[in-house]
Image (cartoon, rainbow, N blue to C red; front, side, top):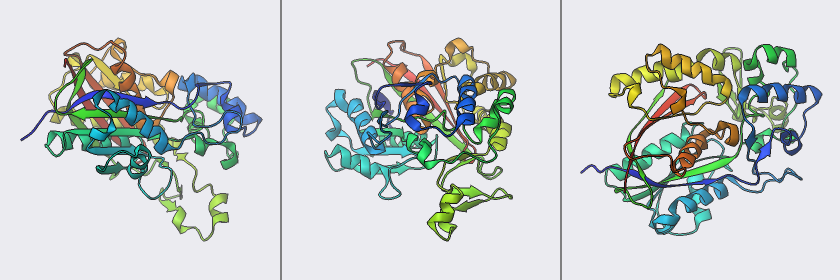
Length: 386
């Protein structure tokens, strides 16, 4: 027997006080005068004004682990439904777990310290939170469990601290970045864009109050890795043929550090050429062949884009596909939350869910691209009364 699955509550964890653009470098540490100049150009183009870091602003030391942030979001999502003890399945997605092993879901479960349950951890980058949600949705829908929680979370700031980064020898000049903002992605885009946070969604078979619920109608993901090389990666270095040399292949730690093998990197050329065309152009075209969906039926469009610089490109691509959604129906909190990777769609949904702006019958379309090796995800939700 198949059941419907409803998001009945959502939780979020945004660590510490928000950090504005002028405070960022003081928290992360400076990389040099040219870096500071480039920062201003990048921030003007990415449209981010505030973000949260799980770092002490005075010392730069860690204040929260990824698992701690995620557990806090889970508790917040479960507080109105009898607490975390009722959760039968915990499905956690992240691209930045606190360690290689054990998996992230195990560490979150340990932080919760409540009751035995099934665990699933999904890897990836921005889509990790989507695949975690899809697993939870399918488990509730298939009758395996009655109550599930899925999460998306990131602890990106630890990668961005100056103590772990070296100014790139081929760093773009501020003048080059001014003329072509995408060029900054390679060296500094990620540093001035990524931030920390966690979100959680509580799923049950029936809608429950006190407010509206979100029925999950479908979740679609698609990878284009068979056609494209890696674009965003960590724990590896890309060679001239586009292949990744893993950190495991280095003879010693010193040579690995020299190549910044553990740093998060972005191939700007691939990103600029393919991210919108593949994840939205081809991704939405494929989706519309599989699902009956018209732009006029979408009341809320929640696009996850890494920078406001991509907003116009997304709008143009929707127009090309004859799927125009007026920007008055778009919802994003990039400016005040930053890019939190796999947590971004959860934090957008959580804010909208608790805003009082949703009405019964509203239909939400979420678009989540991933540049890791180019994948895309779409989530369709309908607002229902309890």
